[in-house]
Image 1 (spheres, rainbow, N blue to C red):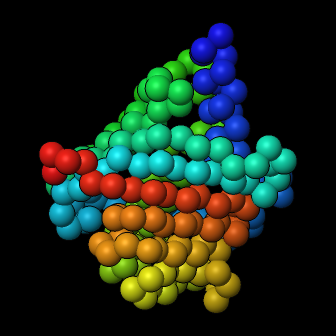
Image 2: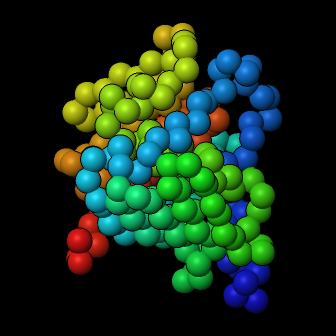
Length: 189
C-alpha cells in the first residue's frame, strides 16, 4: 500500500516533467545546459523541499524532498516521497546517470531536472556560454530570466543570498509549470 501511495504522489509530481500537449517549435525548445559541476564555483550540500505545480494539473501543488550535493567532480540529487528514495541523478559533466524506483513514471526526465537545477543555481556567465543562438539570460541579484527571441520562457526569483540559501521559485512558461524550492545547507557542510 505504501508503494502505491508513493507511486501516486510521484506521478502527481511529474506533471512538470511531462511534455506539453502542444510541442514547442524545435528552436524554441528549452536548451539543455549540461554545465560541468565545477562550474557552480564551490561545493554545496543542501536539503530541499520541492513543490511542483503544473498549469494543467487540477490536483494542485505536490511536494517532494530532495538532497542535492555538488562538488567539483559531480552533482548528486536524490528525491524522496513518503520517506522512500524514488530517484537518484548523478552528473559528472560528461555522463548523466539516473536510478529510479520501478514505479517512477517515465515523464520524470533526468535531463530536465538537471537543466532546472543549473538554470537556478549556476553562475550567469556559465549559463550564457551554454545557450544556443537566439537564447539570452537576464540576471540580477533577486531574479533571472531565460529568453528566446526576447520572450521570457523561464523566470526565477530568489529570496536568499547566496541563491541556494532560502527560497527560489522557477516559473517555466514554455512547459507550463512552477517549481518552488526551499533549501537549507546540510549541517556538516
